[in-house]
Image 1: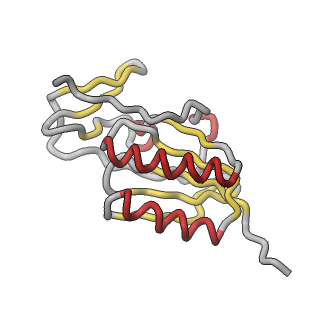
Image 2: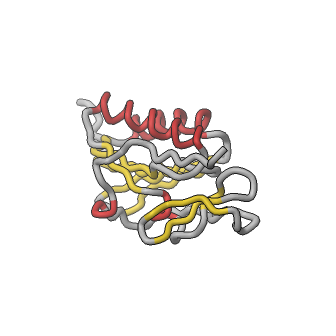
Length: 155
């Protein structure tokens, strides 16, 4: 008889280091991954592990702002899983996972969210805000608009 895997939902916060991935059972955080390697190296290994431990029903991710490459990797991998497993991919901005604090951009600049608009400012704290996986997955915060949120500084 085939092994029955527990149904789970996955949340990926891959906008900066460390990469955070949460596995949610019945909307509660059941397993946490925190990887300090680059997303392109860490995320495939985490997704491989998750795929064989759980029956994924949906993938949620932080679509930006943050590191251009980390966002791109998170999106491509999440979108691939979404298509291959025929499950929904939902997204929200990264400010939902750091208490709406500034997110490091290039050099001393950072992204800030004011009145639902994300802008780049040059008056930032020395270190970026820490991201956290929520203990409970609030699906209402996510939308089907899942394309990456790339915000590039003026040249």
